[in-house]
Amino acid sequence: MHRRNLFIGIAAGVGAMLASATRSSTAKAASHDASKVVYHLADLDKVNFVLGNIKNHYEGVGGPSHVKIALVVHGPALKAFQTMAATPILKKDVSQVQGEGLELNACGNTMKRIAWT
Image (tube, rainbow, N blue to C red; front, side, top):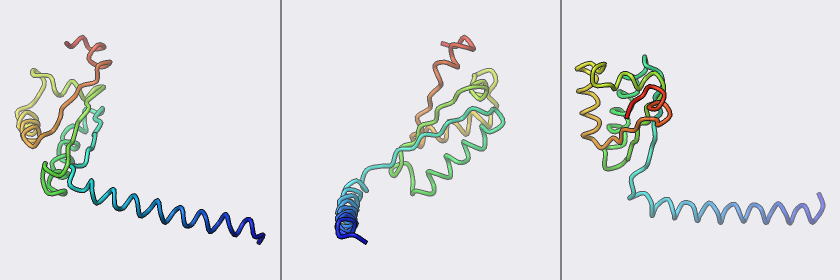
């Protein structure tokens, strides 16, 4: 091994240790902030599954004060959220996760395609 390669290897290792230390102190400072997560839902047959995952996510992190979750619904799944098409169970589940703080979003392109405003 050449001295130059050895020096480069040591410098890279020291740089990695410094970067790691900086990241861990930044992570500790940011640990008081809620994590941010986005779920995407496109499949109509996965609506209840995804809503269940979101409920579990809230429970798993200790509640909505520890995570901010947004759900983006697009494609065929958006039809499940139509007032006329939504089942009572879906309405209850959506209300529950919205009460936890879920930010519910619809894809603009899908809304144009199905003529929703």
